[in-house]
Amino acid sequence: MLGFITVFTAFVCVLLMLVVLIQNPKGGGIDSTFGGSSANQMFGAAKSTDFIEKLTWGLAAALFILCIISAIMVGGGAVPATPAG
Image 1 (cartoon, one colour):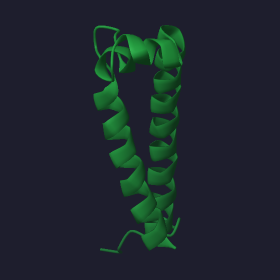
Image 2 (spheres, rainbow, N blue to C red):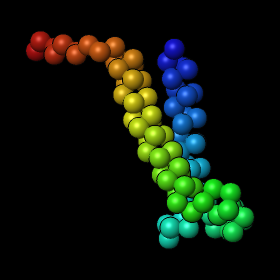
Image 3 (cartoon, rainbow, N blue to C red):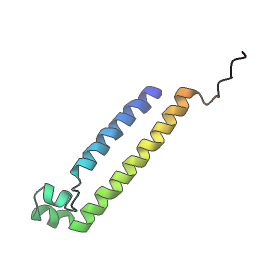
């Protein structure tokens, strides 16, 4: 199960990197990257930006949750006892 979580986390990381790289910091985003006016007609300027932004936030939240789940699975959820000394 931990192996599946690890592979899925890596997949989400790669998707998040690709989505962030698609975005244009000047606000053009997918419209200017993939064909200019033809992409603008297909997606619409506001719709493509909203979709990419929602996808970015969703992938970031999924990565956060997957990291917490994997940390709980690896740690076992138990607090280690302090050694007597």
